[in-house]
Image (cartoon, rainbow, N blue to C red; front, side, top):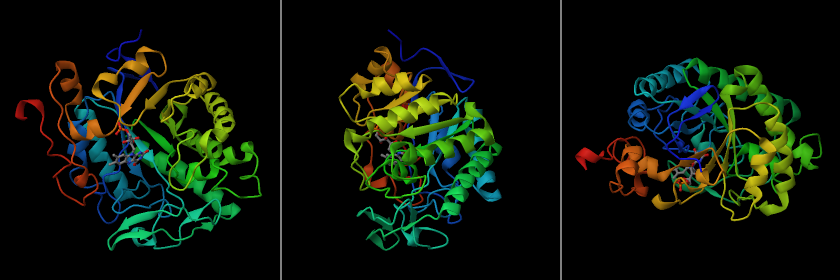
Length: 355
Ligand SMILES: Cc1cc2nc3c(=O)[nH]c(=O)nc-3n(C[C@H](O)[C@H](O)[C@H](O)COP(=O)(O)O)c2cc1C
């Protein structure tokens, strides 16, 4: 049985244990997409987690969907992220930046160019989005032209390069939770009839092309992807019908020698084992809503190499110490998860000594 507190090597870096912080959008970036002034402190506070995965970060203006999310495609973004990675490394931590292109889950009020959102097909998600004027339904997207798909792939590769230039230990492509990559994978959001739609091989092509472009830009050891097989979200309800595609994708990704795949899994069946076998490399698992008692079980049972925790890590900067010592955990403050700007609910969660 593998112990959650045993070290693990991934992407050429040795992690002191097998807990990671899941990516979490906090909507506290500056208006130009540079990480906010408190971001270095926020991540450094949590550096005792073996691996930190950053908030979703857009690779381009088109990629932004939420209010005040950071980017990683301008010199200012790179300088801002450099402060974050320096702070994390000074605290002995490691950070992968998550590259998140939201595709159709965008609202023009939240993007710098205010353009209509883009997607594989002109199919709205039917969901709402928080903007400066409150919740608003997201508009119908327009389908990406073929040349624009190539540009979007290039944008991911460029953003990955800039992330490494900013000192990140790697990048995690967001292929989960109903965002652009997932919109290509799922049949209900992808009605294309060209080589990026239709059969499962064609629906998987965008994900594979993005990963390959990022691998070419920064190397396989600094490249990872997050997937959520069968998770119904953002207007996507692929269920288990898409398992064959995920198996195919996992085999393809496995051949590329990536740092890891990060699987967000809400199912109780054994498909996860299938994914793990098909990929063959390091697997990070995030099961939403895990209790303290459940932490370590998936690693112990050999279902995953690393377990990622979201809200618990958000609310407990010293989560590792608390888990190891049996100290009580802070209660999260959901009303402040995305609340713009301040330290409250961001960098002011107490550590044990002050709790
Ligand atoms: C405030 C908040 C923001 C999130 N933002 C992202 C994100 O940017 N990218 C992503 O892949 N998942 C995001 N998630 C999902 C988490 O990574 C994770 O899957 C989820 O919180 C379930 O895990 P947990 O129960 O351990 O928190 C977010 C979750 C929360 C609570």
